[in-house]
Image (cartoon, rainbow, N blue to C red; front, side, top):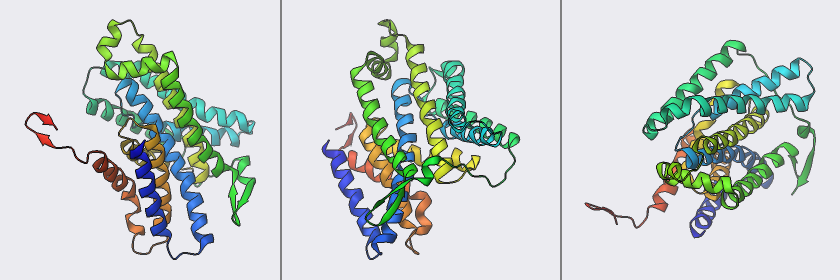
Length: 313
């Protein structure tokens, strides 16, 4: 608790420093935009953490699954399909791709090293991206949501309902998954499998079922994140696919364990990236900002730890 509160205070201080001297309205616009994008980074990181805790797999293919889903939603919209069905199609495609990998390919690598499993998901991501690029040529596209036309005025700034939805979803999903992992039988089984897979199997925990549920949660989050990212940023498969990079940084900020830190980390990365745009000097470092933040969090979490010949002290 203390760690993530101190981290949140540190990130808030960086926000204020970057925003110093700027007109309030300009700063507010970039802050609102950064919180919305940071919410998507956090959602991507949460999906990674849930899956990693249950299966030991760091899934690099979530962005590609979201990209395939977003392109499907766009195509269904072009065909005149009822918009809610198109949005459901986005989530459904991402879920189907993720479950296909988790159900049929991931078990083949269950006993391999973590890095091998991670690289395998990267290969799957490239396959998805190649198929998407083959089906849809690279043309400018946009994906609109009804919430784009709805907004509220905060401190003289109009904030669209889409941005508010992304922010509320990030907080709500963190709370929901925290309750799910801590208060349900499946959640407890996920934690047991993450801590000791062999022992859990001996105790009769259905490993395959537990991991399939974790992959399903990851797929649902990938689809929702891909849909929102296509609306808030750009509907381009490559861009959405590599959204996974800041999501990884957000997951690392949470040490692949703390959902609260993933949320704070993702929001901070989005806001700091957005505010860096205001600085002619610092805007060039925007792409590395998420990993700088993740490195700082990891260094903070390891403060006071010493390496000895017997291990950590």
